[in-house]
Image 1: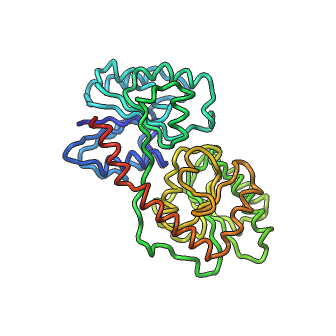
Image 2: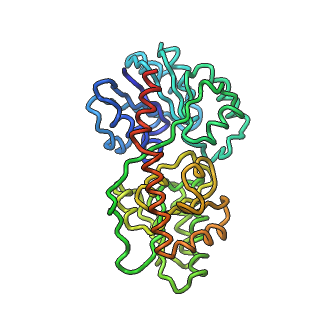
Length: 358
């Protein structure tokens, strides 16, 4: 079976990691793959190690670029995939040129909503999804919240919706390396764009340092993106530049987690964030905002804590108990056990395999 995975851009991100994991772990003797980016394919393609995968960048211009759909149609006519797998709204319009090119099956995945429509209430985007839904054979939401939204708000028939949670592999049990300096390292990993709300995390860290003035604390932000200059300016303005480090994008981000004592995610909206799954797999307690599929992952009071989005005071006070190493270790161990039981990479890949071959 030949699958064409269509995304807005093949770059660093949770969605792109899922696609790379699928290509790397689906049976290679049964699947060939093409990755089609409507815009660009970056060096992130090095994460893909399948021997028969091709990469295609269509160089879509910003805004409306109707010519990109003609280029996509022509490419699909040449590739002749058995199935296309579109990801998120930015790629969903690809279902029309795909059908015109004779593609037999269309699977569309929703990995989370974007900053311009964090709650999925924009009428224009809801209408677009409703108009395109008849051309899609199956929808894959990565969280229960997205599944309910597709059925109740978008109007997708429930029989077309197949909930598949993201999954990760477990690192070695002894992978964590606490700070030799005695600092408590609070960390986050993710693209620095507005929906991740890094300013809220910075404000919460500043407030936490006031609540525990005697504790040596450090915040590590692993990632890069358009919001980085504004976040750095806020750090400088609060006078905490000596305690906050923005690393930029790091290919060893998962290994860096081994240095964290606590993982924090301050997003305004999410699907099923891989970074939380990877943090829990690394035996880290997680403090996160109660958005999207996050409550499906983090059990409040058992593997971490959940707080409302945009509330720096609540975020700081939720982090405070995890300055106790015993509580952090206990909740971190519970999180790792939860990943092993319910969110394995093997289970995710098998679910997609059955759907693709169905």
